[in-house]
Amino acid sequence: MAHQFKSRPITPFDNYRQTRSAANVEEIEQSTDDKLISPHMPQYITKAPWYLNKEKPTLSHQRAQDSIKVPLDKWYSRGVKQAKKITKFRKGACENCGAMSHTAKFCVDRPRKKSAKNANRTFGHDEEVQEIKLNFEAKIDRWNGFDPEMYNKEVIQEWNAQEEERKKLIAQQLLEEKIKEPVEVPKNDMDEMLSDSDLDNIDEAEEANINEQDPELRKNPRIKTLNKNLRSRQETVKYLHNVWDNTAHYDGKSRAMRTNPNDVEVDEKDQIYKGDNIKIYSGNYLDLMDQENFTKDAKEKGEVDLNNVSMPSQAELAFKHFKQKKTTMMSEKQKELYEKYGGKEHSEIPDEVKKKA
Image (cartoon, rainbow, N blue to C red; front, side):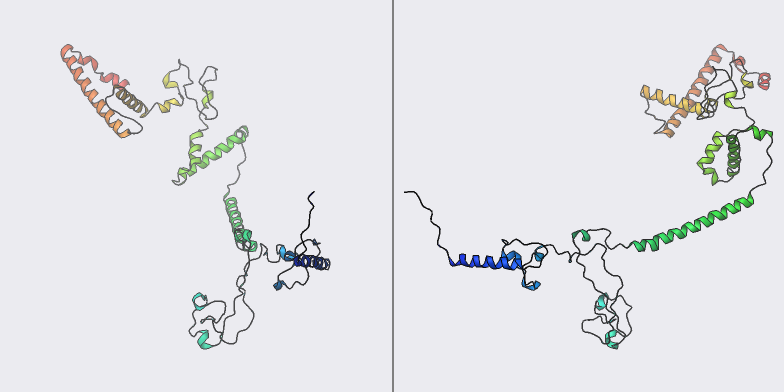
């Protein structure tokens, strides 16, 4: 015999559920909400708590309450006090000023000779205590409570005032310079031949010569550069000493001509300009090169570990002792040779030759 399905007997709870569901549908149909509520939604969701005073089914209490959210521009009102006039001292108020919003410990008014509690008059107004419920974004917002009007009033106005003073000072300086300006001299033929850049260089040279007398302005790197690059107008330009192609190279950017541009046939006494290297190979340069070679030879031979860069004083002292010792040894050896072979009189330069030189 095939199995036959038998339903379970209907219980009183089933009757109650069917009755309750029908009643819930009727209540939902009578709801005044804008959004439709599904009739199959349970009662524990559609029924609002008793403290909300909602008689009909609704889903408004299930959604996020926008009214609780505080806008980002909302902040505590600074210095706002209640307009209510206080006529007598209240229990729990500040003993100093009589305000109810703080105690005597946190009172910012001056300490009265006779407190409001004892005098029972001239009470301070209560501060407006606000309770702002901020959400997470508002709490961590760095600019929360910032008033842009304060920036406009304090910072912008201050900078505008400084800018006005700066313009007045510049105008006054320009006026003073205009008064001190010399009378313009009419240009001659030489001035017309010079270009604008040459005239500017002349002005810069005159300015540099004037400023060079001042020790404070002498430290200016721009003046140092001018003095280095500018030349006297009477001197011949470097690249015009020898106009042939095989002459020394002239670097226009650095205005330098390292080697001697003169021909070999020209006598050295007649050479006005001998190249920029002549300045380098003069003074203590040759002594420094000898000292560098001495330290290099000493390091190669392994006698002394010297270095001109890291130990300049020690290297100079060692080189000085070496030269003294070398001079002494040479003089002693020369003396022995003179004693052995003679001819000392031929090594001395006659006075007549010295006078001619």
